[in-house]
Image (tube, rainbow, N blue to C red):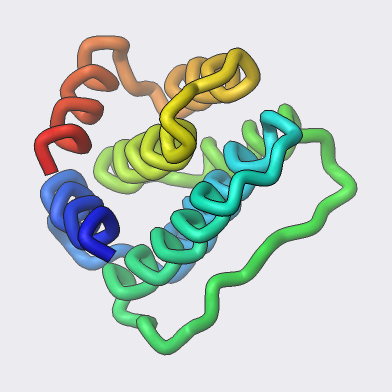
Length: 142
């Protein structure tokens, strides 16, 4: 629970204003893709996914909602493009990147598939490499 509290603090620094429900759903769906992208099911990563989903819903003032999982026939690249480009505000895009980053390293190792996914996501979200490093620093300092 302590890690979730730390992440919530970092997320609140990145996204100061209340999060919209739509942006929360979009970020949760992006988070699910990064959890699934490496093809392994890590218990800690899955628990963190649901915990972060609850935190995102708290930031969107819908804390009593249960965290959904998403099923789609779309290819991950197509879905990634659709989701990433639907986030319009800079804070929402940066929060999405931070959430994905936190989940990618939940099992203490970012594998190639996760790294490739994060690089694509960063570009689609229009986040510079320098800003990505700053966001990573915010996560690590939480």
